[in-house]
Length: 363
Ligand code: ATP
Image (cartoon, rainbow, N blue to C red):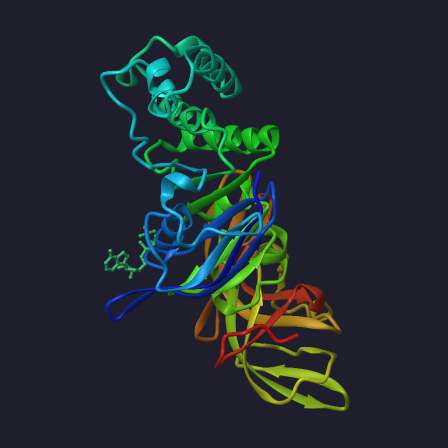
């Protein structure tokens, strides 16, 4: 059990700043996902937490104790590697016992811990097998169990599901989330997969080029992305992002852009260049000649349907609006076809506004 605090963690490799002044407060029992595109600094940050890499500056605390200078083996944190790192010539039971034997623990205690860990991840029936006789998902569970036997203060995982096929990944994802709930332990988990982050995390730290872009619950990141980057990274299909100009007058705000019909809502934001964001599931489609569809407070965009994709459960209607593309997620029964002239609308409560220059959210 551990509360983990990162204070202004920076790590440079020559000219590259892999992580840039990252501060995070991770509560005891949180499932923290470090999320972001390739090269954003996730693994570097995890390795510093694990003690495998020293920060250039900044400090790390576990339960109030500064562990920045503590070697990895003294941190009491268990790392589960992507490759699982199991010993191929040893049985599952011996793989699990190995870290305890290294610590010269009594045989009876080792047996008991192995049994408890194996039952926790449902591999008790596999204890006599060798790693090569296991499926990818089973190997994954053995790797977690081997971390469990050490009764660590927190579990650290670097893309542990990336070697699994799609179906097994979904199943193992659910198992890991359940395991986290059962253990109540702190997990720190690296992935570039937003679905893994959304489904397992209690907190997401979204990284971009070494910086912390946003830190919050999955719902906070999805519902109120703090930047254009966060808005575009979470959600599939991605949030629609359209350039526009904010103009103020009479205490109302008008957003003007080619193809944008009329947008009015209360507020006091100064005139500036902005980006409007609307998620595909929050847009409605109306026939082009239906002026009543335009909301009194919200966005309305005129465009033409370019392509309709049937995904089985829903349809994606891809439209051209002026120079840009806007995607709408519709019920499968929607009647739209390529070439239709349409109006796309969303109420103001579903519209996100970002400053175009800084990329930051406008409140
Ligand atoms: P991925 O998802 O591809 O694993 P990541 O988000 O985990 O990416 P890191 O591996 O932390 O990213 O790398 C962050 C940056 O630091 C990258 O620009 C990378 O090239 C650089 N970097 C990482 N380790 C080293 C190293 N040992 N020497 C030099 N540069 C490094």
